[in-house]
Length: 328
Image: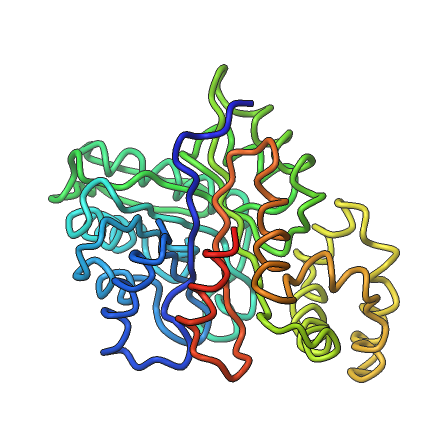
C-alpha cells in the first residue's frame, strides 16, 4: 500500500512525573518536538477525557484521541456527549476511541456486568454513529437500551470513532464499521496478521488507520528494561482476552508456562518464565536510536500511528520523548 503523506507519531498523556498543571506546557513541547498525536488511556488513574481537554487548550494542532473510553462504564448518551464535546474543543482533530476494557475495570472496580463484549461494542459503535449524525436514536438490543436520544452537539465537529480490538471478530468489526482500529500488546511482526484482518473487512479501497500503543522503556540497561517488561507482560498477558490474543498470534506456547505459574499463585516463577525474546518483541527498549528503529518497524507497509507509552526510568519524560522522535 501507499504510505500516508503525513507520518503520524503519538504520545500517551498525561506524561508521568508531571503535575496536571504542567501537562499544558508538555503538550506544546511535544508538538514542537514533532509529535502529531496525543492519546489518553483510562485504567485506574486519570479519566480519558480530561487530559485531552488540557491538551486542546495548548492549541498546538495536535490530534487528540481516547484509547480508550469504555463502552461499559459510561452510558451511551453520556459517551456520545463526551465524545462530541471533545470534537467541539478540538474540531477536526479529535478521535473517540472506544473499547470493552477489561473485567477488572468494568466489573470489579465499577460494579457493572461484563457480558457479551462483542455485542456491546457493536451496539455502542452503531449508536454513536447514529447519534453523531444527528438522528433520534432508539435501541433495544441484548446489551444496549436507549429510548429517543438526540445529541444536541451533533454535527460536523463530532469525531470519528475508532474501535479497540484484539482477535479476529473484533478486528473485523473495526474494519467493517469503525473509522479506525486501536491495538496494543502487539509485536512489529504481528502487524501483517492484524492489518490483513482489518483491511479484509473494510469497504473496498479503504485502508483503515491502525493506532498501536507501544510500551517504551527508554534505557539501554537491558536487564532493567526486561525486568520491568516481565512484570508488565505477566500482569497483562495472563488476562484471558490477552492470553487468547497471543495464542491466536502464535505466541501461546511461549507464554504457557508463565500463565500456568501465575494461575498457581507463583508470581516469581511466572516472571522468570517470560522469555527474553518475548520481552524484546513486545517491549521497546534501548537507546533513543534503538527505540526509534524498533518503532519504525511497525510502520512498514502499514497505515500505522505509533503511540508511545513511556515507562518511568528516572529521567524527564519530555527529554526522553524529544530524543526518541529526533532519532527517527
